[in-house]
Each structure stands twice: as structure tokens, then as C-alpha cells.
Image (tube, rainbow, N blue to C red; front, side, top):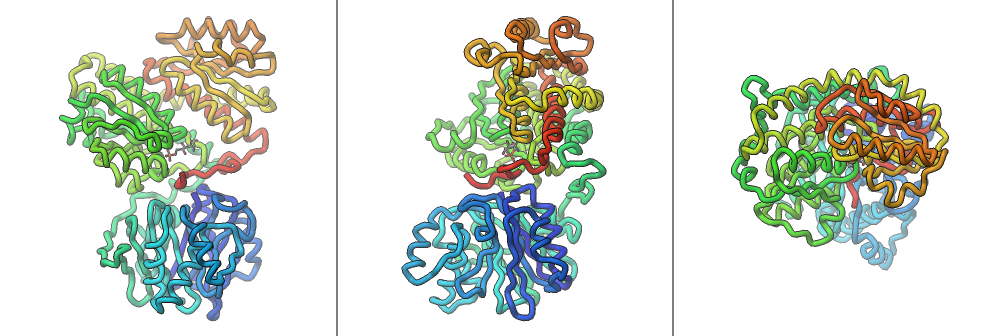
Amino acid sequence: MCGIVGYLGNEPVYEKVIKGLSRLEYRGYDSAGMAYIENGDLIVKKCKGKVVDLENVVGAVKPLSHIGIGHTRWATHGVPNDANAHPHCSGDGSIALIHNGIIENYATIKQELMNRGHVFLSDTDTEVLVHLIEDVRNAEGVSLFEAVRLALSEVHGAYAIVVIDKSNADQLIVAKKSSPLVIGIGAHDDFYIASDATPIIEYTKNVVYLNDDEVARVDRKTGLTIVNIDNQSQTPYIQALELRLEAIEKGGYDSFMLKEIHEQPRSIEDSIRGRVNLKTGLIKMSGIDEHEERWKTAQRILIVACGTSWHAGLVAEYLLEDFARIPVEVEYASEFRYRNPIIYPTDIVIAISQSGETADTLAAVELAKERGALIFGVCNVVGSSISRATHCGAYTHAGPEIGVASTKAFTAQVVVLYQIALSVAQKRGVISNERTTRLMAELGSLPLKVEQVLKTNALTESIAAIYQHCSNALYLGRGYSFPVALEGALKLKEISYIHAEGYPAAEMKHGPIALIDENMPVIVIATEGASYEKVVSNIQEVKARKGQIIAIVTEGDKTVKGMADHVIEIPRTDDSLVPIVSVIPLQLFSYHVAIMRGCNVDQPRNLAKSVTVE
Ligand code: AGP
């Protein structure tokens, strides 16, 4: 959470910082701020609100400085207000700092600093860090670079920081631990620093991902210097970015969310391409091929993830158990890491994360690694922390997902997990060639089927218009559709602020049925398949209590049509692939309801795209 940017070069910093912050605003939008050096002064502009509010604070006269830093905040310590907005400054006003992460021992350090006369203006942990750096620099008489390193060796927690010093308009100091940070190296001795590559991509493709516990100095004269926290010199590893600029722009859509929903035929296709060979009937996934014996002999698979990625993990549980016949446990990463879980060295742990930066998932990966398990990552962001922390993995090729509500990442995750399940089933010899070939062909037909479902947009919008004012909604599904019910409910609540619950359809009668009356929309995934008739009975139970049924059905369905208030037809596919198709109308429904309620679908309140704090 929080987005940070920094620039040191030959051009005015203002546009670079504002543009960079706009690209990173999905990471948090409680406040925005920037600092730059002009005529020997360190100027800080910041305010509660979004990047556009910061632009108003700066006003018509734009800074001409060629060095600066910027921040967009998701509040952890202290409410969103002007004082808590970053950058924060040292007591003498000579140093400004921006931070993404949490300094866990800030209270102890703050008390010590106050005892030494430091006065604080905010409630943040970040302000403590910049005062600590000032304190160390003054006490030890060292350079800022060294003071940052020494100060960081006293802090516990997570940070990506950029520090600017009034007395040196030629350098920025950068450091990272457990929060993402990338340094772009331009062609003209210019440097771009950011939480992810999106603010950098239009200036340079050469980037260095800082590792944990590294401190770097970018300097007009000496270039990039990196040391670790023990002051040992590190060689920068320069990588080429593969990101395209068009991928991070709205491309004519009103919102990133709508664009990303409509990108799914392509993102699904991209996540299949090169892996499925219909001629040989084989699936090629290097993370599985290279560890074939481990996959063949694994007694158990653990899946760790959060939010939507956890829902994709639930679908994977059904797939892996059904196809590969391996017992699977799906864990919330946040619960897993704190309950001393039993992890055997023979276990395989699959970590699923769109951003690859989710703090809880990353910590779960580290824990499982310490216990000897093989860690397989399913991430969307290339080079992200989780993708680097895992032993092997498979990327989802969804492209950048910028809307806070996950849409195309979910379907891409399920597609990749589907291929993993099929591949492992083949290696273990527990699936027939005939079944694999049929499922592979079905998988290949998904982009077209998803294209077809997207045509229900107008119908879905008209249903959303009817229910836009509801206060509660219930989502029901069974088998493969249960995780979809959870995902549909999450989408509605996170972007429209309507309370929604997802339930296994048969569980309804064990409690939630008490909620049903004529005002309650019940969204049911009632596609043909193993539990179709049971779900039809559940629909009747809802109708008997005057609930309003919105049913997702297989094309040509007659039974449910006769009892539901609204039906949305989706193309026929194998039961195991229904989640990828049936989730689309649920995404569209949430989108339209949220828009009709005047909500910001890309930046819903209180949320951030990348949850890099616990
Ligand atoms: C879903 O719409 C949310 N954005 C959220 O639940 C998200 O899936 C969760 O925070 C996990 O993120 P990750 O996939 O980047 O790890």
C-alpha cells in the first residue's frame, strides 16, 4: 500500500512525480505529497486527498526543480489528514522522506527521540524514521547514505523509502525491506524510483529491483551505488522491463475495472498460450517439469493466498483433488503464518498473488520455505517479491491490473491453476488421455465463450438498475461454483459498499435463509452439472420465502428460467471450467451497481490494490 516515486535527472520533476503518483494511486489514495529542492530550499507540498488535490495545492506555478520525491498514501498510523501525509521532514527541515510499509518499533524509537528533544508533528511511524536518520547523522557525523543505513539497522518492520537532502540536489537515498521498490536507469544519467514499474515504463526499460536490506544512492556524478545493511557493496543487476505503456492506460474505457473485465478473453488466452499442446496432449509448465518427482510424490498441497486470490485457491482445491487426486488445504495466508502450522518437507505450497507483494502471503511463503516445503508461485507481476521468493512457479499473463477490484487476475489465476492440476494429474498418471484432451480443448475454447458472456453486459446492467438500492445480497453456488459465489459477494461489497455474503447453496438452510424476504436479491449460480438439481431445490426454497432470484444458467436452460426473476445465460462448458465463465456476469453486475450508486469503482474507499502491510 502507498505508492512512492522519486526522480533525479535533467528535466523538471513536477510532471514526472504527478504522473508517477497517478499511476500508483491504485496503491492508496488517502493523501498525496511531494518534496523537491529549489534555490537551495527543501519545499514540501502535501494534503489529504488524491493526486488531483495535490495538484491544486501546488497551484499554477509549477516547480522547476530536477530532483524530487512523491507519495500517495494508504493510512496505517494516523488518520488521513494533511499532517499525516508524506513526505515527512526531520526536525531541522533539512531531510524529507517518503515511506511505504510499517516501522513496527516506532513507538520505542519515538520515545527515545523525544527524550532527546525531538518534536513530532504527525502520528505516523514514518516521521519517526526521518527523525532517527537526522539523529544518527548528527550524532555520528556521517553522510546521509551512511546515516540511512545505520538508522535502518535499528528499525523492525517493512519499508521502501526515498530520502532527499536539502544540502545535496544531486542525490537521492533509497532503501527497501519487504516493500517493493524499483529503480529505473535512464539514458541520460537520470534515475526513476517507484513502487512498481508503471511510472517508469515510458522513460526507460532498464531497471534494478532492490533486494531486501539494501540501501542505494543515486547520484548525478557517481551513478547508482548499492550496499547491504552490513555495508557490503552489492552489484546492481539491471533487468529489461517487458511492460507496455498501453497496458497501463484506460484505452477508451471509463474505468480500469471495465477495461479489465473486457480484457478477459485476451488475458485468458495469454495465460494458456505456449503451455497447452493439443497435438501431443501435454501441458508444459517448467515449474512442474523441473520438480517432477516432488509433484509425483507429494502427499499434500497447501495453498496460501488472500482475498480474490484465495477464492482462486478454493477453485484449485477442487481441481487438484478431482484431477490429480492429491489432498489440498487452502489457507488464508494471514491465519496460516500465525498458527504454527504443520508443514512437511514433502509438502508443496502454492502461493497465489496478483501483485506478488501481499505481505501476509509473502510471510507465509517464507515460513513454508524455512520448513523445507517446495514453494510454487502463481503471480501476475513479473519480478514481484513473491515471484522471487518462491522456488518455481507460473505467471498469470493477465497484464497489469490497476482497478482495485480483481477481475482479469482471478480468471487468469484459475486458468493457470487449471493447467497445473491437469499437468500434475498427467505426471501422476491418474487422468485418462481422453479426459485430458477433452478438457484441454474446452480450456482452449474459453476466450470465445468469455467473449460471448461479455455480450450480456446490457442485460446485466438492466438487472443492476433494479437492485442498485438494495442493502444486502446473498450469493449461492455449489461445488465449483461455491468459490464463485464468494468472489461475486466480495466484488459487490468492495466496490458498491452493499453488504453481501457468499454461501455454499446447501448451507443456506442452516442460517442465512432467515435473512430472506422480498427485498433480498439472491444471486445463484445454477449451471448444468453435478449439483444442478440440488441448486434448483435451493432456488425453490428462496422463492417460497419471496426472495428475488438472479440466476446464472447454462444457455438453453428451461427449468430455472421458469422460477427465477432474472436469468443470465452463459455458454455450456465443463463443470470444472464454469467458474471462469460464470464469474463474468457477477463482475459486470457489481460494476454497474457501483456506478449507479456513484461509487469510484477503480479506487473504492478504504482499500488499496497491493496490501503490503499485515
Ligand atoms: C479483490 O478484489 C481485492 N483486490 C483483494 O481481495 C485481493 O485479491 C487481495 O488483497 C490479494 O491480493 P494479491 O492477489 O495481490 O495477493
